[in-house]
Amino acid sequence: MAQTMSPTVCDNRPAFMSTTLTRTALEGVVILEPRAFGDARGFFYESYRKDRLAALGLDIDFVQDNHSRSARGVLRGIHFQGAPRPQLKLVRCTVGRILDVAVDLRLGSPTLGRHVAVELSAENRLQLLVPAGFGHGFLTLSEVAEVQYKCDDYYAPEAEGSIVWNDPDLAIPWGLSEAPSVSGRDAQAPSFVAYLRNPVF
Image 1 (cartoon, one colour):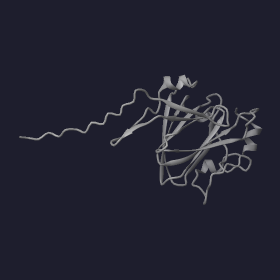
Image 2: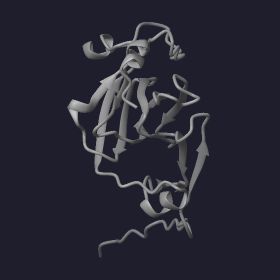
Image 3: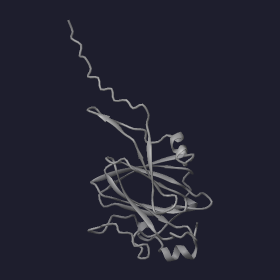
Image 4: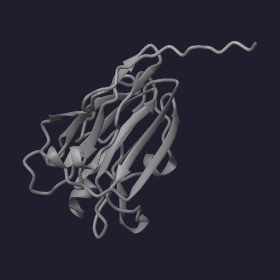
């Protein structure tokens, strides 16, 4: 007679899921931390739920999801998408670790040119909300990192722009011990001063 295996039952289902919102020094840039539930089998969490974000004051209609993979030392940014298609991003790292950066590019903002830097990782499950009006970039800290982000408007190449990652006026402390790996476009991106001569936001 064939024997059947009895499964191990781990009932750790939550009565509710929740997300913690932490405000940063830059208005509109927030850190989201979804609550995760785990047991010996692994974990589960809701990485995005529209009604829960709306309850936190973030009533956003996302229309596009992006997914990138980068090796250690790869730096992408500082990128933005402006008029006529300004774009908000909700960024998370699902493999490895990154240093994620948002830069205020809003002319007239009291924090123009200031930045927020947050480590996002598969382990901490933090998410960074980068509103329209901000530049965005990240540095891969692990051997490989996969970054996924939701956008509230479609990619529009005619509206995209960038600022060089090592701009002296922005002075972002990337914590580099050697030169990062950047694309040709990012290496030749305009300075912050050049952006201010023809601001997008």
